[in-house]
Image 1 (spheres, rainbow, N blue to C red):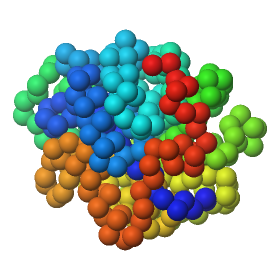
Image 2: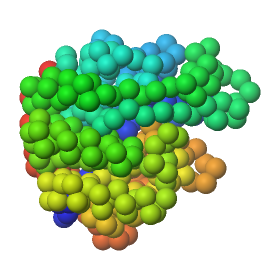
Image 3: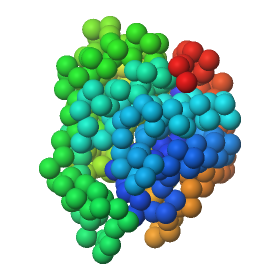
Image 4: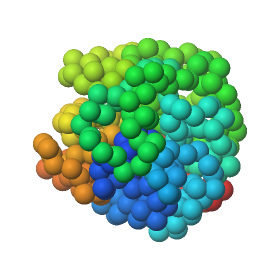
Length: 310
């Protein structure tokens, strides 16, 4: 693992799994997504990870027209690296998930490194009423969700987005995903440095246990040596503890309402920026410096914000 002198903070602003009923702070209109992205960047996030949602009801969408309602504003108002999902939601086809990224050609895209069960159905029983009709069946039916990314899917995404000069946030939800990434690296389909996001605590993926954190890091070291930059996200209550531990181990961090709706025990976050501010304060307390967007681009060897199509 390449140990950065400065920590890259990624903020995942809205995602596709949480729904509007779960938090009033979850942005889904283009205006709110843009404003929360700008605020998160001003708070210290150098990478903004983005999904799109139907502006009328918050349902996940892959429509490039919706993305184009907020991407230019974020690009104009911040220097942050914009990282677009190719994951979309488990209910979308690969083509739907790639649609926007192919059109706007961002500096970075997320890329799930394998298929997995991706579930949140136990959350459904916490809510007696829902703001929008799509939410409850979406959450309850996640007991039957398979987040598909076959080897063929992954290669397709790598080839298409690689031709645009886009680099990847390689999302690894379990140890097998690291070996999948190593397969593609060995074939030369992607070039280092790799930005590996190890993910903990998603139902269907590896659990948020300290032993797993160490094991994933050790496995990545074995497979990639000094050819990768390590980042960590953990779902829900584990978000801040795992981020802190990863940074102290020389890694980078991801926060945001996509991954956790909370700022403390039983306390809903009021914004993405609130989470960024908190993790930045914690890291500063340990004398860790935060990377600027310019420094993040240099570390990850990105093509630059002027080489995108939005």
